[in-house]
Length: 446
Image (cartoon, rainbow, N blue to C red; front, top):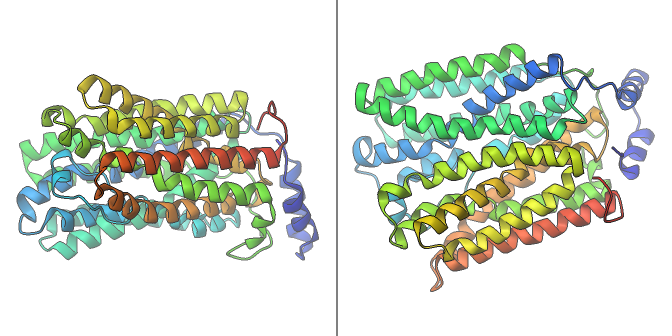
C-alpha cells in the first residue's frame, strides 16, 4: 500500500499540536492489522447494520405497491414514489407504467451525510451519530402504522429513514478498514453483502405478513426485526486506532491536493450517474417488452442477489490483484451490460443480463473503501470515504432526471441504456487514470 506524496506532505507541514502529530505518526507506522480476531465481530456487526439500512431502503417497492392500492390510493404513483425516492428509488414492476420520469434522488441522503459522519469518525465522535441513526430508523418505522396523510409518510419513510441510514453508512464502511488491510476488499464485500441480503429478504417478509396480519402489524414486526439487527452494530462496532484531529477542519479540502484522489472523486460522480439506472428501470422495460408481470417482480430481486455475490467476489479479487484494477474492469463490464440491457427482450436474455449487471455493478460499493484506503493514511480515512460518497450523492441526484429525459425520446430505453452505460465506461477510464497516477504501470497491484 502506498501513500500519496502530495497529501502526506500537506499533513507533515500542517500546523497541529504535538499530541496530534504523535498520534498521526503512530497511526501511520501501525502496520499490525489483526486481519481477524475481534475484527470478525466488528465485520459481522456491519453486515447486520447494512441489512437494516441498505436492505431496508431497498425494500421500498413493497410499500409503494401497498400505498398505491390502499392507504394513498388518492395520490398518484409519482407522488407516492417521492416518499421512497428521498431514501432510495426502487419501485415495484407495475408502478413503472405510470412513472415515466422519476424523481431526482437515489441513495442521495445516505451518501451525502457521509461527508460529515466520516469526519466525526476520524476525531472519535462516531457512537452518538451512529446510535442516533439507528434510533431514527426505528422511530420512523414504528410511526409508519400511525400515519394517515401523505406528508406523514414522506417525513417518516422519506426523510427519517434516509437520514438515519446516512448517519450509519460511512461509519460501517470506515470501521472495517481499521481491522483489515490484506483482506480489506473481502471484508468490505461481505459488509456490503448484508444490504443485498436485506433487500432480498425484507420484501418477502413484508408481503407475507401483510396478507396474514395486516399492514400495521407487518410494519411493527419488521420494526422489531430491525431493532435486533440495529442493536448488534451499536453494541459491537469499535474502532481499533486512536482518534486523531487531522488538519483541514470539517471540509478538509487539502485531500484534493492528491491528484489520484481528485480524479477518483470525479469518476465516482460520473459512475453514479448510471450505476443504478438499470436496476431502476429493468422492471418497467421488461413490461414494455411484453414480459409476464408475474416474472417481472423477481427481476429486482435477481439484481440484488447477484450484486451481493458480486461484492464478495470483487472484494476477493481486489485483495489479490488490486482494488482499482478490479474496479476498472468491473465498472466497464457493468457499462457494457447496461448498454446491452434494452436489447434483451425475452425472459432468458433479461435474466442473464440482470445477473451479469448485478454481479458487475456490486463491485463499486464493495471496493470503494479499499480504493480510498490506498490514497492516504489511516488518520483521516473516514473523511476521505465521506468525501467520495458526497460525490456519489451528487451523481445520484443528477442521474435520474437525465435518464428520465432520455426515456422520453423516441429511442426510449435504448437511449437510457446508452447514457448510463457510457457513464460507466467513462468512469471506468477515469478510475484507470487515477490508478495510473497513484502507481504508473500496467501490472502494478493497486
